[in-house]
Amino acid sequence: MRLTQGFIPTIKETPNEAQITSHRLMLRAGLVRQTSAGIYAWLPLGLRVLRNIERIVREEQDASGAQELLMPTIQPAELWRESGRYDDYGAEMLRIRDRHERDMLYGPTNEEMITDLFRQSVRSYRELPKIFYHIQWKFRDEVRPRFGVMRGREFLMKDAYSFDLDHAGAVISYRKMMLAYMRTFRRMGLKAIPMVADTGPIGGDLSHEFIILAPTGESQVFYDAAFEEIDYLSEGAGGFSHDSPADLERFFQEMTSYYAATDEKHDTAKWDQVAPERRREGRGIEVGHIFNFGTKYTKSMNTTVTTPDGKPVFPEMGSYGIGVSRLVGAVIEASHDDAGIVWPDSIAPFRAAILNLKVGDAACDALCARLYEALGADALYDDRDDRAGVKFNDADLMGHPWQLVVGPRGAVAGKVELKRRVVGMSGGDRVEVSPEDALAQIFANSDRRA
Ligand code: ATP
Ligand code: MG
Image 1 (tube, helix red, strand yellow):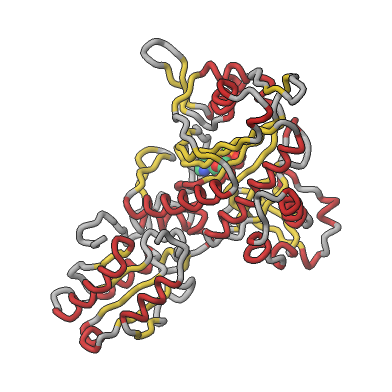
Image 2 (image 1 turned 45 degrees about the vertical axis):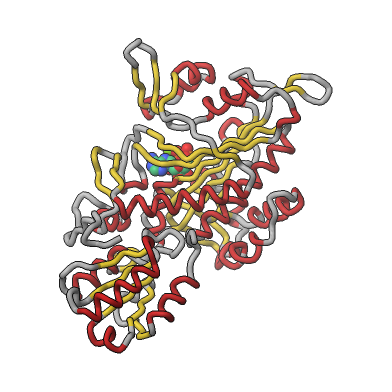
């Protein structure tokens, strides 16, 4: 995209409505604008990041065997009356009445709807297990929407739902999702830690929140530093297969063998057993949550399948959420510096930015055109007739992982300056290379669509 033709309204001043870094940077770099409390419009730069996060989430869900579908945002109240949640959900639910006086609602989640879709068509144990997912906007009328997209009222979530014949099957589905989640967050450059979370009246140990550490996190978290040492991120997870129950078991054991819990589920007796020098405590951001809730919805919504001996049973369900729009803010909380955002390659809005330091200079224009052609639509070409300082600042603010800087002296010599955007090194780390070398490095270095 040529910057002169794009719509990336950056802001110099610090917006005073924003309390945390990611919110400030998202406004300043022109990713989003608030349209009402907790509701945001996604501008082109922000939308590109959101789409990249969605892409990774989708690829990992597909790899786990989950099937994508798309349920609507507006749901009939009837389904929620069946499960008993229409009244329980309280003021967080946005209730709507249509012209025929029918009660509708803007979905805060989809357990009832997926159970209804399931019971309409699935009859036999032969069709199980099944995992469905969709990536859809949710609405929750949060008491205190804040921190930009981190706690919005309208937000994008990936929610998946599993159906299994029995508990043993549900445990396998749960582990598959945990593996998919670890891979998903790793590909975004995040070290998410699965922490034991509250299971409510369901009981059991199958509820984990995926937490990334950041000083602005909303909950207090506790974990054993051993988590930082086990390399489940690169080698471990890569060696596990979704198709092997033994792999999934080994993976789950590794993930849950060390202490990690949020304040809700903190167990001081167990915490005391962690060696003092290994105790880590801090603030955490919840980016995902997986939860087995047994037959809660299949029972209340009278959903059965027949077993091999012809008897009806209520399938066990789980639900699995990822805060897709929250992740945009969470990644920024985890990766930024004083100059701006530092995107991981995989989700950056553009693979690279081309900075033409002297628009109108024949050599600069020609070299930039060549680079732009090679990188295609996945580059942002700063072709504004503006000062170099402005371009450097904006590129650092927007957080492109690579900057290709083209000035008149270099252009004549057939050289560009390549800069890798690294946290805490916004200035003075440019190296002069040939355009070919620069492009080769950029292409070699990212988890992006070809
Ligand atoms: P929280 O405790 O933060 O309110 P939750 O337990 O209500 O989260 P879930 O119902 O498990 O969240 O939703 C799945 C995921 O959706 C969460 O892990 C989080 O990443 C995201 N999410 C939940 N509420 C919001 C919100 N108001 N704004 C943005 N993302 C959200
Ligand atoms: Mg909530």
